[in-house]
Every structure is written in C-alpha cells, then in structure tokens.
Image (tube, rainbow, N blue to C red; front, side, top):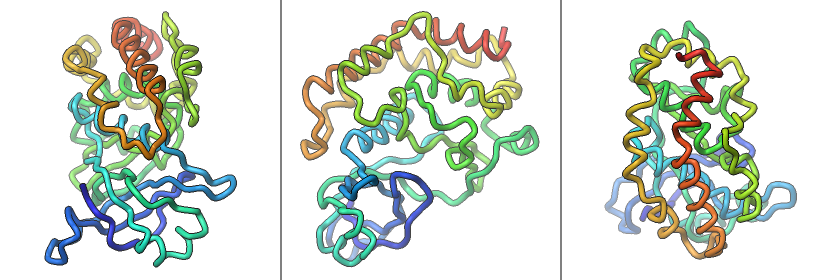
Length: 267
C-alpha cells in the first residue's frame, strides 16, 4: 500500500480529487510518485463516502482485468499528519485512513470529436469502452469532457468511475435490484454525441465486443469485494448485491451488445 506524504493541489471534479505524492512505504529513501486520489470527507454538501471510493476501485480494477485502457489504481494510507498540512483538506473534513487513487499520467482531458479520434492509436478499444460503460451503468462520461483522457502516446483512456451503478452514490441492495433490466435499458449518456463518434470509428462491428466479452467469462466478481477496507462502511449485504448485479450483467452480456449494436448501427 502507498502512503501519501504530500498534498500538491486540487484537481477538477465534484468529488474533490487531489494530486499528491506517495511512496510504497514510509521509508524516507523511497522516491515519491505522483497520484490522483479521492478520500472520504464529511463537509456539508461535499461528502464523499466509502461507496464512491468503491466505485472508483471497481471501475479501475475490473477494467484492468478486462484489458481496458484504464489508469493504474492503488490503495493509499492518508495520515492525519498530512491532512493537517492542508487547510482545504481540514475544511473538507478529510478522514485519515485508507483511500483510493490512480497513477498520474501525462496527457490531457479533451472534447471527443471525429478529428481528435483520428489521432488515437487504440481504436481497437472503442467497442470495449462502449460496452464497459453500459455494463457498469456509468452515467457520467458522454458529454463530460473531463472524463475523456488522451495520454502522451495518443491512447484514449477511461477514468473517473464515480457515477457507475446508475449514478446512485449511496447505492444498496434495493437500488441495484431495481437496475436489473433485460432487455437492457441503455444509460441516457449513450445518447450523447461523443459515444456516436466512438462507434463511428470502430473498424469491425462484427468483432468489436468479442474480446471484452471473452475476458468477462473468466471473471470472479467476488474477488472485487474481498479487498474493501472495513472503514468504507460497505456491508456484507452491499457486497453481495454488487456481485449479484455484476453477475446479472454478465449473464445478459449478449443483450447488452445487441442493444449497443442497434443503438449505434453496428450491424
């Protein structure tokens, strides 16, 4: 686990991500690395719960296991001594303890357009990115330019999974049960033009979803709820509900693909 040792600056975002330096231990000889982290906080109208951190963890970890171009995710220990060095973290009511974040990557957020997509080197991932956002019911990418990222190697990366699971930040077994729709109901953000631009650049509509669907068959979703820190206050019922929801989505992956093909004329 990494240990946060310095707060650098706030990053754009409603959940108050911060650019920090961190090391893999508290040994002073370690070379600090740059990360963007999110942490639990209690300021009125600016709360960030453990479930938001879980959403980020699930989105990055599962995405990596499925071979998607996501950021490198890590757990962090945020010490009270570091919080005390930042007036803003004190104001936010930042909680010390285990939080979550991703490796800082050089690049930029940008508006998705046909012109920008022409420069991208990983067009093979476009179908998987469409599928993944629908699989997790991510409502906050589409038109949100802050959630599309191009690294210096012109790779389009997916990041920021705060609004998955239908965008319900305090999700529970009842809200997840309500989200089990078949045939799938596409998230509203799939109507945003940015997703159409992605679909228009897909080289082979017949095979664009095969890789992620194949990898999905080997995934054990229980793995993702076993590592959740107890301080995130995610109950055993919550964990089982997440696993059940993901299993439901996997069971109906063919239906998700058919809905996406019909939506974006990928026939």
